Image (cartoon, rainbow, N blue to C red; front, side):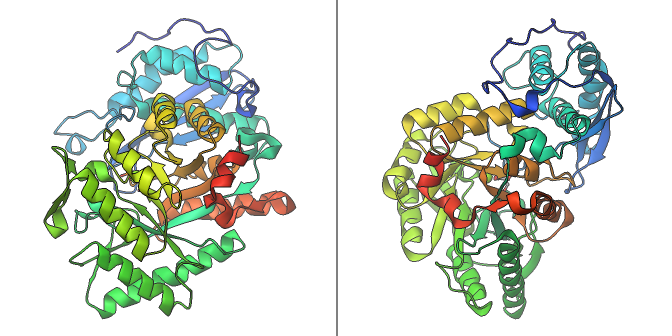
Amino acid sequence: MAEGGGRPLKADDGNIGNYVDRNVDRIVDRIIDIDAYQVFDSRGNPTVEATVTLADGSVGRGLVPSGASTGKYEAWELRDGNPNRFRRKSVYQAVANVLGPIREALLRLDAPHQGIVDQQMILLDDTNNRSHLGANAILAVSMAFCCAAAQSRKLPLYEHLGGGEGNLIPLPEIQIVGGGVHAARTIDIQDFMIVAPQARGFEETLELTYNVYKETELLLKERGQLVGVADEGGFWPLVERNEEVFDLVLKAIERAGYTPGTQVAFALDIAASDLYRDGQYRLASENRQLSTEELAKMLAGWARNYPIVSIEDPMDQDDWQGWQQIMDVLGDEIQIVGDDLFTTNVGRIQEGIARQSASAVLIKLNQIGTVSETLDAIQLTQSAGWRAVVSARSGETEDAFISHLAVATKAGQLKVGSFSRSERMAKWNEVLRIERRLGSKARYIGGEALSPSFGSRRS
Ligand code: 2PG
Ligand code: MG
């Protein structure tokens, strides 16, 4: 453990806060208390919750999610590894790191704001991947401070994060069927999501999704193929081949009275890093091994046969050539999203931009560990003319910070899993609340979020 403290910071210290005038970096009252404790996520696994109290009485809370199909370059989630406590998954050390060194350092700050608070924790951790204090310890405090600062400024979180400009209600990408490591690999593809490009409003999109979701459930029941729901609330079906899921959902779309392609389209997360071993992609459910070229060909075939508008992680996180191939074949027609490839890391996003490896970046706070670095990742993505997709994790909580983040940064797209289970619905419901609060200032982006020009207009 680091001895508490770290060196005092100057306002221009370090490399975060590329925003010249970032809304979230307003100075607020001193931090007078920080608390942390272990709570539990949607899989029942332990996670960190922290509260930050300011001298003016404002209190903010931060709750950290957790991935299952994690990228190799993600910030480190610190777990105790003690076989006698929660099967090695307890987070008591991360909690102790908040209550000890992080608390001590942050209570000393004279003029706290998001950039300084985050930078202080980064310096205190002093590793590249936050493995000393734990990204779960750091993020809980970073989010809690952000919420306390919003309260202190008497602003809703989206306005604190984005200023008066943050008014863009995102296009939802909603999972209908879950697979991969979220469903014991019954099927290989992790997320079969739908988007509704023509729906005119957020609630209309939700209604359409609800209808397709319910029809899918009925169909699976009729066919005796329903196992239950996967980690993110999408159905866990008994199918022989990955492609059967397209046929299933297409049927559900039609039975719900919608036209596939125009009214409802597919967005996929292949989570290909989970399929990759020794230079090959293994589709275990079909007992097939594919080379990079063969996988690219298979995905191109799917894109010809089915109305797919977005593919996330089509290739492994280190298979940069594979990403190039996918961009060459599909990049003009389909949004190509990097999740494990980029891990919300500015350095990796920069590399991806230089190589033109994708056209969008999945944004997850706990992949990088602080609110400031997440905002930097979004800003870099948008300034390259790429699209940002704000995303939840498969292990989620009741916290809805990301709904505010998506609206505030005008990301344009939000992915939080399916249309069931409260940890998912909390995010959709929060967007409804934000939309209501914004009133006539709210703008729903709809299908425009997927057009290449949306990205470039943001630069
Ligand atoms: C992903 C996420 C959410 P996980 O891969 O995009 O679907 O999964 O949180 O397990 O990484
Ligand atoms: Mg993913």
